[in-house]
Length: 280
Image (tube, rainbow, N blue to C red; front, top):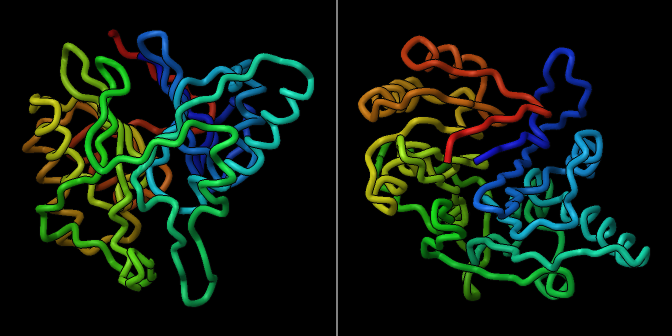
């Protein structure tokens, strides 16, 4: 399995790619190309072009959750593939996989909708849209987790925003937040967008779904931005107890949290253009 960081908040020294406060990963495994999120703009397209990566032949596009820093890039991506079709280039119609609530507007009292800015009807000409709350095996080794079970009281989701579900306006606890898990011979590799549902909840659910308690790597955002001491300390203890081998923490993980986790578990710096490879 190969994972390429197309977008992250950070860029790395001597790697001349663009960054933005957003996330997009390309996962390649078992002759499949899976794009996780599209960032906030066309940066993922520009970085992919610099890396000579073809994004016209992806098999699946997975949305980790409906926030605009993970989905706004869908708009330039659709423009990009329409232009390439007009040039008579071969363009796949990939599966677009997400939780059913990812498409629902997420209303911030100050900013308005900070969710997806494109409707299902506008997506359908370009993607095969599949929505699922349940886990789905994308390949024999790569799993879409669907709706994450939430059992840790220290990972309660703050809900300053609202969402309309079945005609009822509710606090948005981001039930659409999900993750990918790669099942290697040595253990699980957990690939997250923002971990709004809690990185410990995600790990616990990944172990349950995959039937494997070994976690060798976590790659992605941990949603630890100035977290309360209790949450940070209990998260670190959970990761230690789970014997996590290494973390590629990025995007929505602040320096304080990286340093605190790094005292117990190796934390690897991440940036746009980075490529991580695992034996299949």
